[in-house]
Image (cartoon, rainbow, N blue to C red):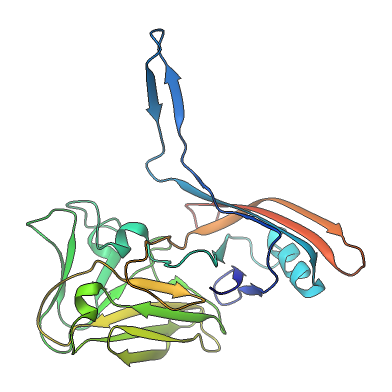
Amino acid sequence: MGNLWIGPPGAMVEIDQAAKSFDRTADLGISEYKSIGGRATLTRNLSPVRRLKLAWDLLAPAHARALDRIARRVDRPGPVFVVDPAAGNVLAPAQAAGLGVAGATGITGLTQWFKVTTGTVTENTGTPGTYLFTAADTTSLVAWRCVDTVGNFPTAPGLQVSFRAPTAIAAIGTAGVGIDFKKADGTYLSTLSATGGLVSGTVPANAAYLTPTAKPGTAGAYSLAGACLTYGGTAENGVPGDGLPPMSVTNYTDAPGRPLPYRTISLDLVEVSSATG
């Protein structure tokens, strides 16, 4: 498990001091109504909202200043991304399981993935809501989109990253995996690649985004279930997806510590739907 990273793509700050309190409970949005007869009816949000509550005692000055600037939006007006050290897979929950809304062509369905060279991503007609990558030849390559940004996965130089191919692809002797790194403007920077089902390494300088890829190396249709993209550790098979949503600070406290210049800092963050919120 790695450290917490927080900030905008390409400029995330690593906080290597453990928080004294860390609450990552999702807001399920459940409301309960009772009839006169005592029967209960529940309503809930279709997509639970993630909330984070973090607090540090005697935080080092450099980290305290960085969190202060993030909370007050000194450098950038939009939301930030939080690399949660408790999250073992930053792929979206359905995406990690190779699932999507049946019949959907948008980011809740087919466009969670895309072909890079040859091949096609299709819905399994025999099992609606499950998705496959059909490799047309040995060069066919499939890639993952960040569902929460509808694009590339935010990252930062120096962050340890690891990607494991879907279970069906990783099991093939001809499989290969890669992580494409991109600059802040989305242009290609470099690729980290490996034979087999697992690739791990360090995000290079000037990288702000990444895109994981997998190559079966053998023509055929393969389930997309079981993929894992991990920040700060080694990707493992079967880890549920947590997602990597944009978040905004909703509450912030900053108290001088004893001794100075250490400070006691707390942050409350909530998942937001807009990249400019």
